[in-house]
Length: 126
Image (cartoon, rainbow, N blue to C red; front, side, top):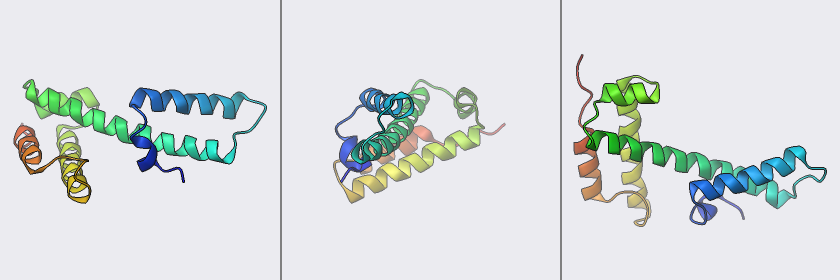
């Protein structure tokens, strides 16, 4: 069965987007409809792309914090409030911690979570 969890390990963000685009073009421009397995693969690839994009976004947020960016600056770069940026990052850290508990090869271990929370800090006042 095609699932995002199964194919997520096989694709980088770039290769998943390329394969998704290939199937999308065939589906929208082609004379022959996608086979059921291809249509399901396209759906699963869309989910994989979304997951990888969120993960990449949060790694970029962490890099910005490591480089000394404030939550106001990060929020502005994302087009959202500093509070929304901090809350999204905090939820991501919680999710990474949970993933590691569920399956130790994914997510962040306790030390990594502690470091991520320390780096995230709190939203500055003002």
